[in-house]
Length: 363
Image (cartoon, rainbow, N blue to C red; front, side, top):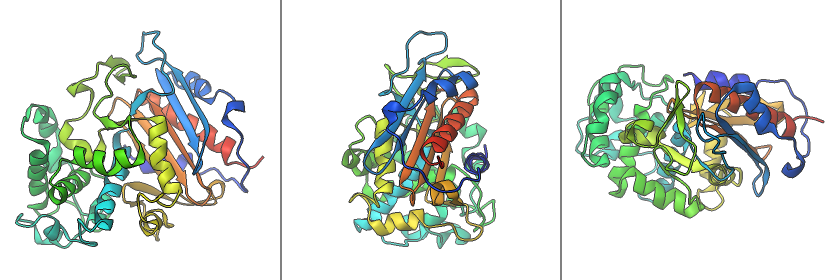
């Protein structure tokens, strides 16, 4: 799925000026409207400023065919929106001096046999999808079909995947953007090598706990929570309701809408003391010519509604859908989530566009 194309279309409306926001309690039921237009089981969304929730809403059911209503505090799987979190935790390790700033892949993985075309690249090349790596040679269908049966520790699995990906000549063009999950599995393996912890433990220690994201976890959210759907059928939480766990750094986080907002608000607040302001400035700077992706975020050039550039991403494990938009200059962030991919993507995009039009469009 080309998430960049979808999000560019979503934010491309020609809007001028900026409007004051309205208190969310007085706003219409946007979630119900998006749900009715999409046919998804459920959809939820919120609008955040740096210090407040401007609107939040949820509509629908946790499982198709059930009367169990989705609740505003439910946990949702955010798929590839995990990537920006992984990149931010790596940058936090740099700020703490655990990882050297600008470290090459050869320095991040000492003793690993790395192809010369890759050895001098950095974490930014991985988190910008510019390392020339592709999924098929390492985590293609054969791996996906068998990886859940691998009982080795996850850090061992990821180290082996990193060695396979980096030990061969890159299948793509180094320096050219090519979206691939393997980039972030390698980045997660670098976090594990630097900390001596699994990526999951590092995420808990370096992000979820400091930001107060108590609901955050990994894999399909356990009951009581919405279930993901495949082909319209609810998928009971468990190993087969998500990608293999080794793929974690590229997309296995689940989280409540409010706790996801804490991460978005940290960006709006120039790091909020969790990341250095300089790190956030580098993350949110306007894209250079031809640049489309940086540190886990798709980059959209200046849009009038945003007052500047937009950070954007969509995530899915094929059973859920999540969308996030951040307008750093405007000081506003929008997040939408659904427990389905096909109809849920439509619901998330529709809801995000309505929220953008309400809270950032001219009146």
